[in-house]
Amino acid sequence: MRGLRDFKVPNFKFPKFKMKELSEIDEVKLDYEKIQKAHEEENKKELKNYTPTTYETMQEVFYQATKKYADKEFVLEKFDPKGKFSEIKYSQFKEDVIAFGTALMRKLNLNENPRIVILSETTYDWYVSYMTLLCGNGIAIPTDKELPDNELENVIKRSRADVVIYSERKEDSVKKVLPNIPNVKYFIKMYSEDGIDGKNVGMNYLIQEGKALVNNGDDAYSRIRVIPDEFKVLLFTSGTTSSAKGVMLSSRNLAENINAVSAYVKLYPEDRFFSVLPLHHTYESTIGFLLPLACGSSIAVCQGLKHIVPNLQETKPTCMLAVPLLIENLYRKINANIKKSKKDTLVNSMIHVTNALKTVGVDIKRKVFAEIHENLGGKLRIIVSAAAPIDAKIGKWVEDIGIMFLQGYGLTETAPIAALTPEFQPKVGSAGKAVFTAELKISSPNENGEGEVLIKSPTLMLGYYEDDESTNDVIEVIDGERWFHSGDIGYLDKDGFLYITGRSKNVIVTQNGKNIYPEEIELLLSQVPEIKECMVYGKEDEADPTNKELIISARVIPNMEEIEAKYGKEISKDEIKNIIWNKIKEVNKKLTSYKAIKSLEIKEDEFVKTTTMKIKRYEELKK
Image (cartoon, rainbow, N blue to C red):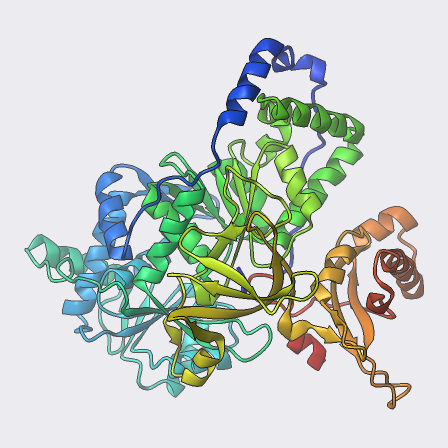
């Protein structure tokens, strides 16, 4: 899912691994007759979709789920940093949403589709705010909490927001922009008991007032009926290649994500999602919030990036939505510790044996790799990677240790799901296949079948906010059907699985008309242990202005931990550059000559990134 500012991966800490020998694990002593029979039964299974749900609105999802799972835990959050996780039930969530919606209508007189900005870190009051708007009057405007004050002011003004709901952490930002946004009617502070004081009011106060109204028979909020295709959510894209556009989504767009996933992946009330990505992004707010709600699952809120590992161990989730950078770093840290423990040969042999057993119907991976699983909470069964390509080797490793690895593809404009790996048809390396409600096709494919990815889907946005020209630029009507021009370059294999090879706006075109997609080269560079992060681009030849051929260049952040471990801590900048350059020369051998990297820049600060950890190329290149 494209579109997920600056992000520093935490230094994950894992203990040394002991790892049992295969001979110590009882399940390796197997009845091969039973194995063969299980394998035969497995081969008879048909690859077909599960029966999907048929929701039309998120209001429908909300009322059904909160009734069916009333007594079950829904959100787990640590409100006291030193305390334990609190559990909030579905019944309380329902009560709080209805109460808050009633108070917005009755106490603040917000009845005519108010536009409401939600500005906060991931927290229970965020979930309540968003769901209140999805099930009532109003338009939700989830906003990036990392926006600089001037950009926050711009979002509030552009969206013509009536209300700003904010957390205590964002109070200073709100106060700074307040004099410049006179049209905002109310500022609602999360977890505050303060009564109405001019434009300011506490969210807890409103919820309590709303409960009193509901208990006295006020059912105005519950009687609202959401129209499936009405404008309900406004999301400003992070703008990795251009200024942010406002994406308008309907309730149907969001509900169709749930229908789409339900056909490919089985989720259960016993599942627990681990929320680590920002909620203002549609990947997390839809697949990490609305989807578990529909399934009766629970959500554990991560306290912050540095708390990922301890929070995993405390809450024991079964599902985690992630971006490649996060998965890659978990992979590197775990494997570095395995190597440090001198268990890498053993682990590799166990992967080989357990893979062989799995092909004949016997899966003992969770038992064999129990020590790795325990470090991730012990119950993790699904990791979903989206927002950018990931090295297939890493996805394969996730599956090798017994965790289902799924990949998703989509954009804010598709709310976001357009493609997903079916759990019954895994294909590591692809971005998934079109979800059953959607269709993908490749526009003007080249000799390799590559071209721009076009998407037809019921999750496709209503359009860009107050920007018909941009909407018409990306949505083409073909035979009466709306097709979205994604701007991504890719191809489809014979089974309909999508492979993304680049971004059309990032493409480097040679003088001979050859297309070079930086992402393809970056993926190879990401496999070099001495490279932490990189960006490939074409730059002009400053030494020869008459040369119109762009020089393929790499901007690299070295992995100093790896370099110091291999080459010593007393190492100069020139030596570091030589080490990286020698590694790049090895990568160049794997590339066609016209794609070879000719220039290297060592970068000492962090890349400017979106909240889904993708490099903002246009901002980097401006530097």
